[in-house]
Length: 217
Image (tube, rainbow, N blue to C red; front, side):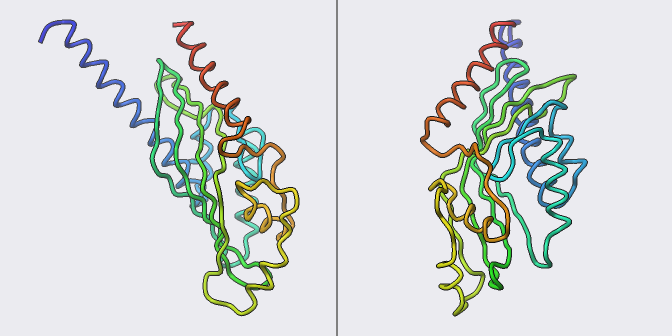
């Protein structure tokens, strides 16, 4: 193998290692969030990182604090599960954009009926490697659709569903928003929905962020 081929092979190996490191951050984020491993969750972010999801928009440090508070206040039997699917990663040097399918399942009692609210979305992550470690700079949820179902058949469920207030809620997460309202909470004001102008703007910003690094290299 000549020198050029060896350098190309080394570059390929480094790229594969970077992609796996990025995916490991995404996995550790989901596990830390669901299992209440708050130090692990916080370690997935750079200090200035931001979060923009259904119920929160702001500094990532505040998201970790709010997540802990919500978990501590849960009723017995309430749970949240984040399941990750396919991921596509575009890396340029020490910056990368990762887009990952995700399913979020929230189990809670709604007027006494145990129900699962399921949101289907994608996470768009701006990620940067600093001092050899990849972490999240910004994470935004792009919401696609959702649903809510009783955990078991219940004659009271039609009445519960009829009580949902869907007014003004985005179609991409209307059930999530309605069940949050029923529990005294509300959606963030800057929800990004699938196929929206906001999604296009978000992805254009991500591409410019990658281009900045490429131009500086």
